[in-house]
Length: 173
Image 1 (cartoon, rainbow, N blue to C red):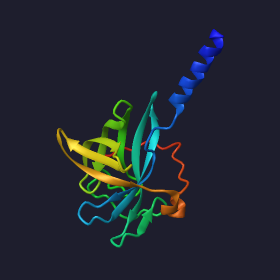
Image 2 (image 1 turned 180 degrees about the horizontal axis):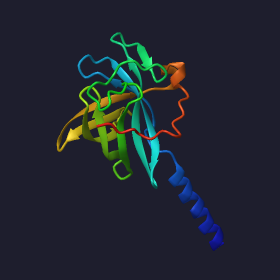
Image 3 (image 1 turned 90 degrees about the horizontal axis):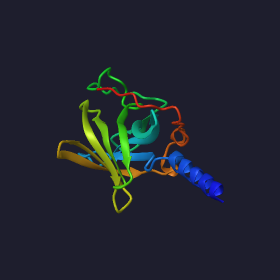
Image 4 (image 1 turned 135 degrees about the vertical axis):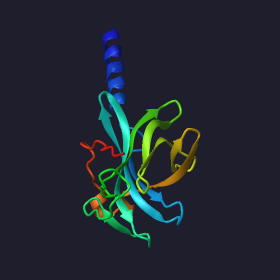
């Protein structure tokens, strides 16, 4: 009986360790100035040694009318202030986010403002409305954005089945 209990505990612990990180998925960012949709970011899990971490990559941009204008299959606009001048779409803007199960949030990661090329400390959590709250900060000062959860029906066809299995963030500073 002891062997069975020990084996069952081992299975449960390994299953919990293999579970996906919370908050992975597609999110719509909102422009702080215009209050219109700005981009779609895919939050994905990746491994760094034995650690499972969260990163975020821009997979689509909206035009000034609120329509998807670029996707990961056809990036156009250049992030001129980011090292190497990559395209916005395909750019990792969040990395090294660690899950804090005690506080149900991500901490100790980084977030980039691709328009400025600036990198900040970051925290991510969900509020009572199940909206994602993303905060970039320097010390105690910072700015928090609300990102909307997107379902498959909200996405262009080419974004519905993105395979992030082999994604690792490309960090540009």
